[in-house]
Length: 232
Image (cartoon, rainbow, N blue to C red; front, side, top):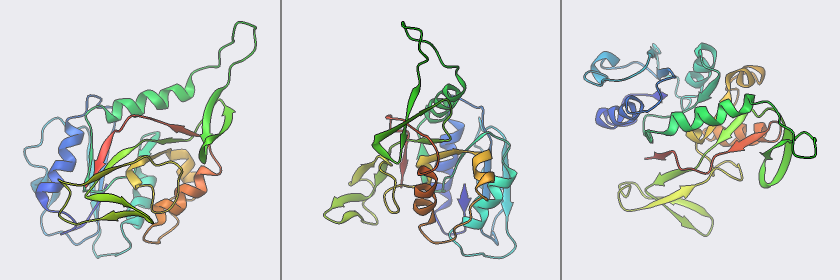
């Protein structure tokens, strides 16, 4: 999770952290990276939130002002887990999100099975477009839909209206992948693949869409149909 002072209120930040405390599956860690300096320590921000798994925090000495991309890169290097979720302090995950993602990730390691004729069955995974398939035993990316709060669909895409989060919302499927049509929280990739790709190497404002499009062309994608969270 990337964060910086005044990006969201501390109440909104606590809402984002509380959703991790509410997860039915606790088999994960939280890395919080703050584009510093920070006015108050995270111990104050997290005070009173119970049920969290391991939490590690980092605060840079000076503001890097690169939309959190340097901090995302630090997180890739420091994470212990096999799969990484990139999120922001204004995102909320539903209580079954981590368990759903874990179940999907575990299925990547299930052995192939034979059908009635004795032939090996191959799992189908998406390649870039939902109607383009590749087969294989391993996928490197999970994609899931979210609710985009405060937004509505217009002719040329999506339009956001600040302050309308409680009255407007659209479902952002994440497919087909493209800059401006996928949020960082929707894209879950193996840490080893992030490392092989050189980490978070693109520092443009909308680099998540550009990086994810690039990776989608190279690796198998496992889509999840269930909505697992909200972007506020």
